[in-house]
Length: 224
Image (cartoon, rainbow, N blue to C red; front, side, top):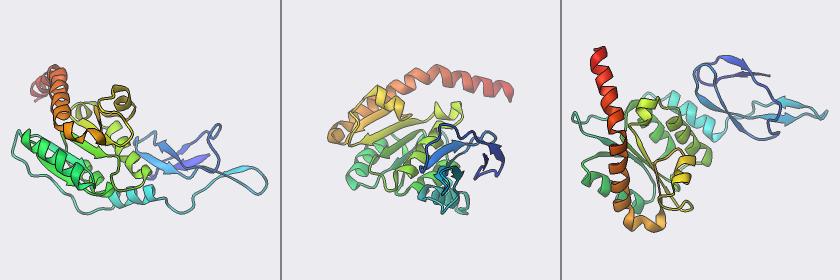
């Protein structure tokens, strides 16, 4: 079946065997590697299957809104200062992480919606990214944020510490963090201890990748 990428518009052949019927699925363009939702297969009156375009989902509308946005929010930060983006709607969660990161000398900015977060991340590099499970938006919209992080170039991803604040995941659960493409998970019940956990995890993260970043900087100097 022919499918068109919603970003670069390239058409490619999709094997439909094994795909669910009547459910939205996520595809990755083989050309530009952008993720996009596809309505999937629908049952026809004759009992067969066909592709369904239909109305755009909330996730599709989000991607289009970000692509068409004319507002480019560049963060103006002093050279050498690290930046952090917090995606949270609960004032308690927002305040807790904002205070912690500012005490660690991060330049902190916030996003209240998935669209706001995606626009910021498309135009700025952040050293720390914190997302609350209760962050405003549908599940599919939050998944777009996670996919954006997954598809970062490896040198950019290694320079971004990702923390997920959750009502379900256990604090400092390494397997859960790995499954969500994050470096740290913190349960909301442990919010009072979030500063200790966040500082410890970021310090260990920087120590682990110090050699990696040193080699990258050396290669950049050599190429210049």
